Length: 181
Length: 181
Image (cartoon, rainbow over all chains, first blue to last red; front, side):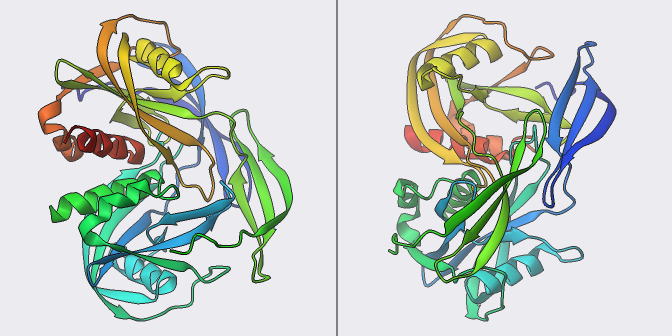
């Protein structure tokens, strides 16, 4: 398989728009065949995300959280940004405590996922959390998150729920299913 | 299950930054418990994406394409924006012709996926394309796309490829595997 594609040469990166949360860059580059293009992308992020698949008493624990991008609630696994100087396991435990009120004795890394890498550099690390114990930390959620239990033994039926359709959640579900089967 | 969460009331949406490709909005809203927040999001898009899993002679057909967000090549399925007034099947066929030089007699819809709906409204429709026939359309790619064949009968081994990790691609792979098994 051709793993030896020659990368384009980036000759200019400019910030062209900026808000509190987002910085948009233009990237001028030349492909190895001489074709030049200017692309736009989000400024590469220094912080990864962790998404946690928590399992307790043979039930997956999910949350329903409001998503401003679609102006609706979404069903998915707890997730959050990894803080600077925080390890992956530590961040997974903190997010679990903040979002569903549990810590985990056992956290298993499954896979790193990218998301639309033409525009974003962000990476989401999928982990499974088991051997949960009650421990609540105060998060920054504007309202209490609604926790949903779903039986592990028919986890793929989650795909029939219309509000369970985010690509990282769907990947995490299948990766968890593959891990146990 | 609690499907009856009361949505926050959005009382103001402002454009706060803009480039050629991206428009960033601030969204001021009040949750049903009275908590107020201002979020940022990408202005909701009117155009969906189609991602196509093409199968020919028991091989999946993938492409390696440069992604400016990660400054590297990514292995994934052909995809693209659905044009205004274009149907899903039509768009899938056009993208296939532009990206790998085939049309498809048989296109099967699998699932709609969202992507980080806290910030984006974009939807990606996953389809399988079968009964392919040669037909090339000129796309807008800056360099010829490298086409990669992968045997259907061990498709999940794709997950071991380090450059196959985009969440929609991983979801599409598992959805295709579930469809045939």
